[in-house]
Every structure is written in structure tokens, then in C-alpha cells.
Length: 471
Ligand SMILES: [Zn+2]
Image (cartoon, rainbow, N blue to C red; front, side, top):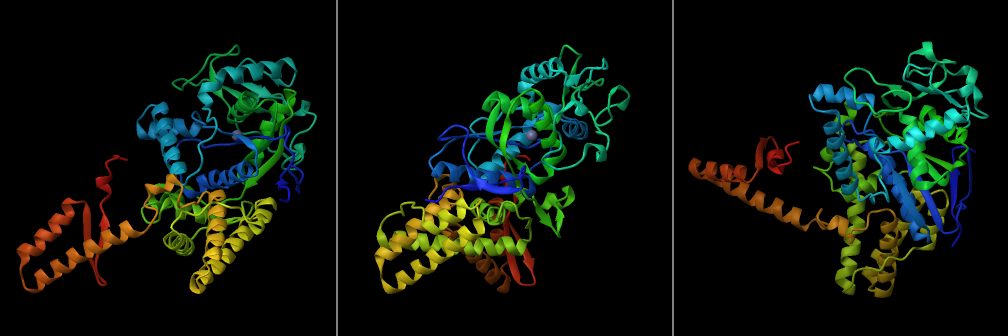
């Protein structure tokens, strides 16, 4: 097997991945600020870095994967006012929504999933260290700032010049030594949640959280830090500034996933509403949505369209149909095997599009082997395809997907049954037996099935109210 090469945002080059400690990989991925239900733009990094994690595991590494939860933030406080709920109830509600979305997409749970509010002690310790080392200061207003002019290096990831930088828009400038100094800690405002510190009550700045939690779970130095492209500046630059000023090695490699775009733009909140994960999962299975989100190279923008999603679903179902047929023909579930073409593609900075081409090729060979009756070749293709799907998190035999109905049979049976009932209703209407036609409609309605008469004939859907979650 060739060795793994990965791109590093810091060096702008692809190089051989060598872990700090043989056989072990530590990854820190910036997680969600839990203030709204996730749309697909929010979960793409979860899927992309899950593919990295699964590939590392498949390559024999023991992976410690940290993805934090930012559960205190201005946006959460605003949402709490808007929803007339306590801030912590808002954070919990949307944390659960993210957890559900990740589970539906078969993203492995992180090894540890630290919440910011649970790590204030570690943040205070880090600030104390930064003040002792002369890198941070508490001017007496309750804020604590990092003094960026004192840093040996800054802005190395985004390659900006300090003199070109705008003032950090996170605090009252009157107390800053330099307008570009950023807040590690923010003094409490009346009515806002706060935690006591030696410098006054307040709450953490976003950047400080990640430096403190990465140190707590992965140590002073670790292998890979990940996140979305939009986090490079200021978030990741400021994480580096804090951790390096504390004397830590911090991340040996930086990886960033590109955005999901809609009409070429980064997905906005208004657009995102219709593309919330739980909305899309009404029309497509989690395994298919995952297949679609993971199909582009992680560094390429993924331009969302419903057509492309539908096409991806159809392609995935073809692969699934072949695997199911192989089970019928061979009397056994395929054994996951990683093929060379797939492995070479993944080792080339996770070149998923090339890896998908290797799956298509195995599918072509497998289907023609079915036609020619070559069962050895059918088994070979099925094993390789399942091995590839496992790494991509889309293995239909994975128990994570069984509850989603890994075959279409249930859906088809339900659709057929409802269409039969609708045909009976239509026949009753034609013979003007309105009592019977109404009884059929009401019976379906009682089961939560809504009938809509359209120009193309009646259409059915399942009423959302029957799901019982109350959300
Ligand atoms: Zn972060």
C-alpha cells in the first residue's frame, strides 16, 4: 500500500503524513456553535473529516478524534432572547439536533466531544499562563486580550500582514494596547451568563475554547487540526497565536474543507433553512445524503442542487442493487476488501472523486460478471465495493443504516399499498359512492397519510405531525 499524502493549509503543499507518535493520530475538528438546526453546509466538515478518520483507521492507526461543541456564544444568547428560552436550553436543543444529523449521516461519534462551558477551568489556566509569559494582559475592565504585536509569528495560515489587519471587532478598543489585539475573555454584561475568574466575571472568547480543549484532550502538540475554510481567519489564526504563545507546538498539520455552495455562494441562513438536514432526510435516506456530501473532493466547493442530489441517490441505489443481487447469488454478505485503485486514490489527499471512479469500474465488472455467470468475479467486485463504501461511511450493511430501511422494499410496499387504496377511492368516486371514497381518505388521514389531488393524479405524503418530536 502506498503511503498517505495529505494537503497542509499551512504550507500549501501535499506531503507524506507522518504521525507525531507511531501508530497514533490525534485530530481536533472545530465543531458547531449550537444556535440553529444544522443545514448541509454545517455538516459537510463532519462528513469530510469522518472519511479521513475512517481511512486512517482502515490504514491501521489508532485515532483520537475531538470535535467540540461551542455552547456559549453571542449567537446563542441572541437566539435565547428570540426563543424566550434559557441560553442553555437553546444550546442543548441544537446540540441534540446536530447529534441527530451526524447520526443520520453515519458520522462516527467523536472519541470525546467537549463543551466549552465544561472547560472554563482549563481556559483560566491557559490565560494565566499567557499573562505570565507576557503574551496577554487584563486591563482591568474584566476583558483579557492577547497582545498580537508580541507574537513571534502571526497570520501564517492566512498569510496576511499584521499591518493590513483591521481592528479585532470583539471588544471596546479603549482598553486595548493595539486595536488588533483580540479578546481571550469577555467581561460579563448585565443579565448574561458568566463565570468567575481572577480578572472578573465573564465568558470565554470563541478562539480560547479550542486552544484550551485541544490541549486538554490531545496535549500540547497533535497531528491534525481541521475545520471549514471560513475558519482559517480569524479563528484558526487566533488559536495558533494563543497556543504558540503558551509554548505549545499545537497542530502539526492544518486541513480545511470547502463549502457547500448554492448558486455559487456560501450557503446563507435563509437558503440553508430549506436545506436543513432533517428536511432533506424526508425525501432522501441518510446514506444517500452522505454519499452526495462526501462525493466531492473535500477541498472543492460542492455546488448543491436537488437534481444533483437525486442523481447521486440513483447512482448509489445502482451500487446497492448490485450488492443485494450479489447476496442473492452468492448467499453471503460481501466481505469488505480495499482495492488498490481505491487505496491509491484515498492516499492521494483523499481523492474521493477518483476513488468513486474505482467503485464505478468495480460495479461495471461486477454487473457483467453477473451476466456471464462468473461468480468469483461477482464476489470480488462486491467485496471491493463494500470495502470502499465502508471507508466512505456508506456501507449499506452497516447496522447504522438498517433502521433507515437499507432496501427500498418497505418504501415500495408502502407506496404500492397507498396507491391501491387511492385506486379504490377513485373507483368509488366514479360510481358516486362518496361514503366509501371519504372513508378511504379519512382512514389514510388517521394513519398520518395526506392525499393531495394534483393534475397528475393524487399524491401522498406522510404528515409531519405524526413524528411526535414536537419540533
Ligand atoms: Zn475551533
